[in-house]
Image (cartoon, rainbow, N blue to C red; front, side, top):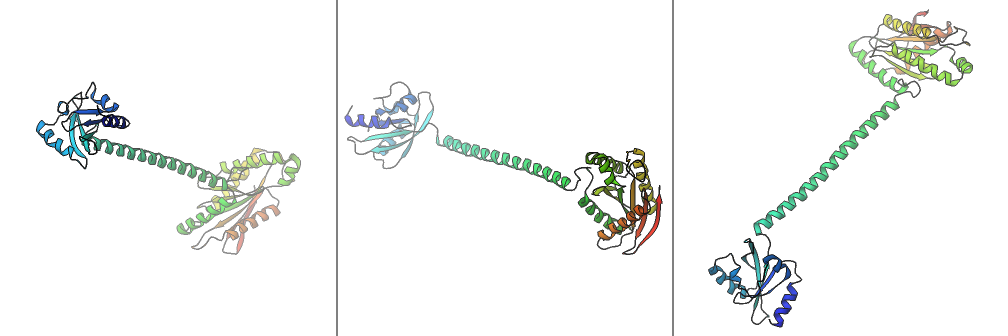
Length: 336
């Protein structure tokens, strides 16, 4: 074997694909290690005709073309297991005589194209899977944020001690009740309730006992209301009721029931000048809304004036007033 062939063999042995070098007669003069793995056995000095899957007449036609090749020229070989292999060939013109370098492809072109498309499809699937996972993660995060937001909204409208609605929540419900009653032309009621002499209760029993008493009273209020009604802690020992679609006789009945229930609890209040147990005073405001904005401050002021009258009259009772657009009239007050 010539030194030129040895140099070519050393060079092609570095290439990652099976490579054959043939002379003008089609004899294999060099092969790299990948080529030996591919063809198996000894192929050196064998004629290319022994390996081809192409008809001999086509090979005879291609050999001269390969010898004069200036570009890649396609052809087909057959491996030792009978598989067909596509090749590309280029002439090595500086060799005397000229040699032909064959580059073998392990898969036919259509299979390579299929593999490329499959890899692209798999890559696309992976991208879609990542995007789907990201969408699921974002949806889960959105649900988590919605739950957290719902919780924060609930907390922002809830009194931390009594777990009743707070003043902010009451004001929102009051505006809603005003619009509802203005549409249906039915009255509703609000009522301010105040625990009698609660400062003395705290002074006598301590603030922890006072907090427990507020919690018991709050739950007592809540237990006596309809689902459509609302009770909120308005501040300190003061609570406020919102009774939707309620006439004055129903409002009085509800407040009487609440005051009686509080007395039935028998929560000791030894320092109260009213009774030796906890009692409550109430001021009720009845209103029949008209279309327009809710006069929230005036409604609360009307109920507060009624509560003041109940306290001035001796506590442990209610007073009812009707809101008439700025002019309030005391209709009834009673110790019960």
